[in-house]
Length: 243
Image 1 (cartoon, rainbow, N blue to C red):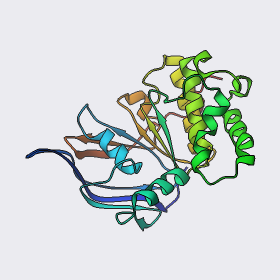
Image 2 (image 1 turned 60 degrees about the vertical axis):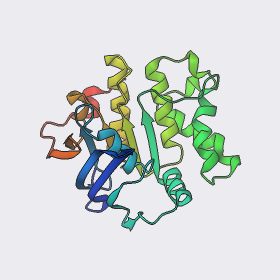
Image 3 (image 1 turned 30 degrees about the vertical axis):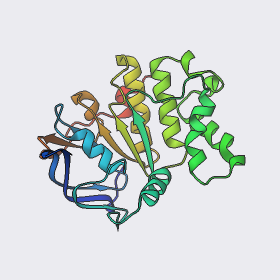
Image 4 (image 1 turned 90 degrees about the vertical axis):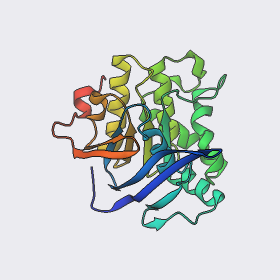
């Protein structure tokens, strides 16, 4: 699901890391737009810059130079607190390693982003329960995360990313630690978020079969964009979603 409005616009984005007198250029002049409601996959070999790009787009790091507009606003002048506020309100993250709290229930894990959201505490349980239900885990809501399978943990991570109703979902290798069946279910859920809820999705993956759920694939190499193409035979959630 896409519209004509750009939610993300980056122009000549560069990122260099300095170690003494040496500088390592991770991104070297990257420019592209992402439309609101678009599903974009970013691919590339190790060291291509895709993780760096994810961190910049997700407001987890700042570029060395270049511009980044989010919903039409240039965020280059934002303070650390302003970036954190924007990130908490507008962005959701799903990571390969799940990043769930140990010895903590599904409900408490999903509620965590609400602590920083400004949403009144009286609504936390309702919002978290709704998010958990949306990924099909309501029967596991009070289970400790250690009692879940890998696929279930990733679905908890998706629910946690959804609980603040963000505009953009960043999924960083979301199937990397999963078996094929669990990976298909997770990708089905992510694609439903895009197709049925209109969420903008930016997916980092090294797997072509996973990237083909997206409408568009951006390939990076050595910190630059090698190609930016539409997916001709896009997979649908019906193709992959194991009920």
